[in-house]
Image (tube, rainbow, N blue to C red; front, side, top):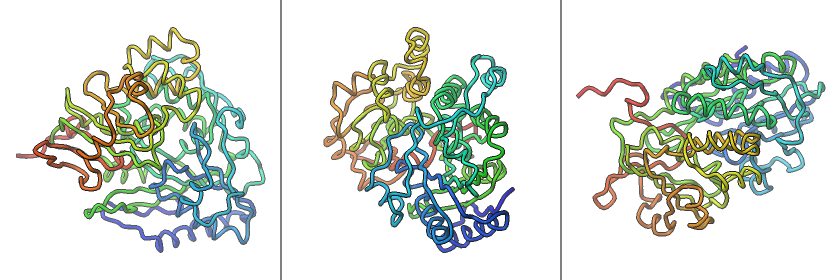
Length: 432
């Protein structure tokens, strides 16, 4: 059921209004059963701008006096949060309340998504089953509520991020993470991004419906976008315990987070904030979210002062270095020929997602990786200081810019939207 659904393309939900909605959510949950033990599952620092941090703090402050509260950040394959990151995203919450998730070792098996289901969802391309797993903490029957907090935003693997993805990927295990990512890559990223109903979401929904029905999951979802003045605001807030809250919020997400362009820019410049983007595993949102915008034979320049590695996970980092972003045909062949890559299909999917397939050039300007490392994975290398001087993120505005006579399309944070031409989004051209 929906506990509340509030939002619109011109709505701005203030912290005060969000507090009132959080109070309403807790009152409704309390009417079901006393809230003595509550587990909160927000994203990590890589989703700092999701507004999940303030909402988690609101929930904690309201619950801590009457309930035992633990926090399990949805790390997925990411490294655990550091104390400074906890303080930045969740100010005032004691560090001992946080529990780390280990996607390889801290999970239990729930059951399988059958091969017949995967075959149908992949249009006959894949023939494996997928093991659904979650962090063992979620199966503790003493939780009175498990509240998953996160942002609905276009996503390269599942279409629109969050809801059950925060559970079965964010605090899930390697088998479903690997195979869901591979399903998305094989089905086609550009067919998925920005869509509410996709094969990957259907795969996760199957697992949730069959194996998580008795877990007291509740979803608290945001939709965020930039206002006319450039300020990031919350356009919608949704809460529920089934898919209705997701589908309702996804409509608003599509309305405010898809950025259709009248034409394809020859040059796109994307800035990756250092504290949010430390690897190409995360930073390649610059590629995913703009690939439907960049013109054929155009260039994507990625300003990445914080990028110091390729994968957040040591195994994935090594595989990216070994195989590189070489395009779909090469990656498919490598999966067939190399068992370790075949065992880490999320890495293989990432290699496909991060390639331009030869359609446009990608120039990476990292703060903490060498030319040899960048060129070794198939990207072009740009000197960060030179590029920052030429394309200063402090003076560029989101959208079209003139830089010394050169037309540049600038994106200050690729995690907040999806950019593409109207044609590639399947929209009618604007009237002359």
